[in-house]
Length: 308
Image (cartoon, rainbow, N blue to C red; front, top):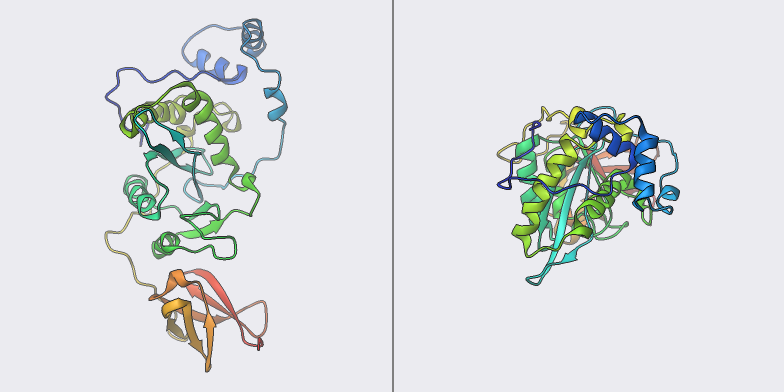
C-alpha cells in the first residue's frame, strides 16, 4: 500500500472499468500480462464494442501546466451530488494535489457546508500536512460570489498561512485537474453502482481511491500512478491557530462589524468574513493612493484614498 493510502475492510477493491487502451495496457503490463502493444488493446476493446467513438473527440492534445512540487497547490471542489437508496444525497468532497494528481481527500458528505469541509480538511491536514496554496471556485462554502470570495472557511485557511485562490467565473477548466478526477470517479464508480447510504458510498470510495492513487497509470505522469510523484508536506498542521504577525512599522486595524475599518479619518469596507480579525495596511507598491489590506500574507482588499 502506498504512503498515505488507508486500508479497507473490503477484501476486494471495486473494478475500474472505463480505462482507455493506453492506461489499460500499462495496468496489464505492470501485472505481468504479455501484450504486444497499445494498438492490440485498442483493437480488442473496439471489437467488443467498448470504445465510444465520441470519446476520442474529448481527449485532444493541449498544453498542461502543473506546479513544480507536491503541496505547492491543492485543488478542491465538490463532485456533483447524487441520490442514495436510503434517501438523501451524497456530496463527494474532493481535494487533489496539482503537481502529482494525488487524491488527498474523497469524502462522502451529506451537505456542502463550510463546517463540514473544515472538519475533513482538518483530518486531511493532520494526515498530509499543509499546502502552500489552495484553489477553489467562487461558490459556497468557499465564496459567496466572484466579487465576495471570502467566507469563514477561507479566513480559517489563511490563518494557517495557506494562500487562497479562486477560479475565474464560468471557467471550470481553471480547476481542470480536479474536474478530470471527477469525470474518472463518475465513469469508474458513481455511474456504475447504486449506494445505500453515506457509509456504503465511503466503503466504495476508499478502495477505489487507493487504486487511483497507487495503481492506476496517469498519461500526464508518463503512465505512472500519482503516488509515484506525491510526498507528504513538511508543513505540519498546528494544534492552535497562529495569530497574524506584521512588521512593526505597518499600521494595523481590527475589522469591525459589517466589515468596516477606519483609516486616516475615513471608513472603508472590507469583506465581512474578516470581522474581528487584525489586518495590516500597507501602501501598494504598484499604484499611488492605494493601500493594500493584508491578512497574514494575503491581500484581501484595497483602499482607494482618492475615492470620494
